[in-house]
Length: 111
Length: 115
Image (tube, rainbow over all chains, first blue to last red; front, side, top):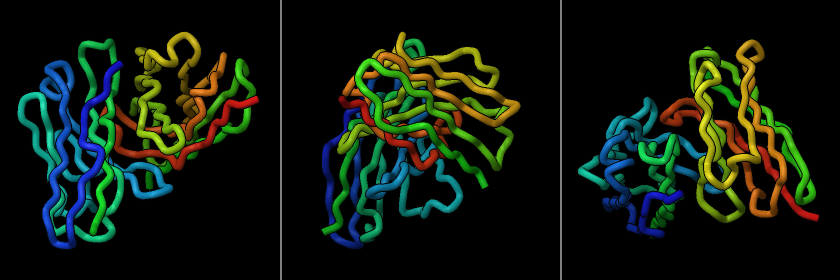
């Protein structure tokens, strides 16, 4: 089973905007909702974005999600030191008889 | 407050079996589908299995199909993962996770497969 493709790393200085891409296909990202998760070191993942661009309560509006065709993106504006974490996209795949695909993960470093 | 608490992890020899449990609280467990997701040491997230609120259907990753079985007991607010024929590559932290679009995660339980 395949995974969604993300860049392995991204970085920025405090206050900058960082964007993370997530590439998939017509059977996953294009036809299903995309979710984004943040995983701080040594902790369980946390939902950051659901249904492509919705933020759960408590998630700062510095985080935003978008989707176009077979790709999705997570943007972090006003980067802060506490945003240093691993980020994963995810989506169900309609062609693989029920498979929840995660992205390969992106490590965000705040310089 | 939604809480998911996993248990049952530990050290097991290759070829052995282990049963993980997840106890849910703070929401109507019987109304939600559930998942197991794992993370090998230093690696990314890998979805393992899904079960609907009524226990049918269930789905599995190819890497565990035929070896792992997901089940639930709505009366006990509990989710299970029976793991048989364990391999070294099954070594990971296993997370219990709620809903089709996973919104809550447990803290995880470590499974180590080694002789």
